[in-house]
Length: 366
Image (cartoon, rainbow, N blue to C red):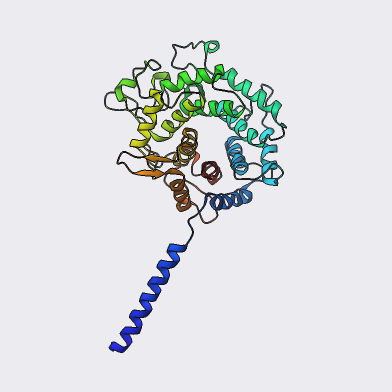
């Protein structure tokens, strides 16, 4: 090619490269509000005529999605919110619980209902429903009345399933709901729940004499010490129960809500585990399984800890809110929804559920 043609071509390429670089540099970073607005529009379109979201799964997903709408700035006068609340209230039972007929998930569904209704209860409209619902939760909590006193590994926990075995996930939702309903750390039910939470931590202490704690001892949390003990992340070679991300953040958050001081060895050990395993690429110890549940719990726990930055094991400081927004921006679908493309476990192939989780997580990033 003639040299006189090469010079203009090179200049054109240089100008195009510079223009692209300038455009990239000046393009604003995604904001939590922008991502949430797109998620809200997705949920508006996905909501069924009866106000539900994924009604085949009971009222839980509707509670999560509607709470996500409320925490994204919508009010109870918004049609999507009012319809969601009306649908949810249709599950109110005579015993005060809010759950599907014949449900195996009474603690889970009632806790989520309380969390949703307290977001909507600015004028006290739902005081009576919330009061009865929290009384129901306290009534089904494992304690002396269930023949499981303080020495039992069931004590203080909440659970679901045909055998109602308590677990940390259900117990953390129980604590969240009781706190949202106005109970303080000194509430007896919250203190009972703290006993169970402390026993799900891989940390030997005067609060935890389970045989599992010493076998791992890393300060993280697992699913349950009850019924022989279970970790969704599996067992170690010596029979310990592996810690993993979503439960560690759930355990830390629950301790803070239960009034445990940040200088308490339990909190310090949990936070150290978090620093050692800080990531937004996966649910640590679980990979893609439960990843968006993890994002929600991650955000709520670090907000409860009142930290803006987390320094990881390599000494790198992370602005967790900024990084979470960037991560959710990368994962948002073209229609504004989110879904777990890496794992269908725990219903995370359902965009209604996962978008609800994402909106709740984003609400702590403003």
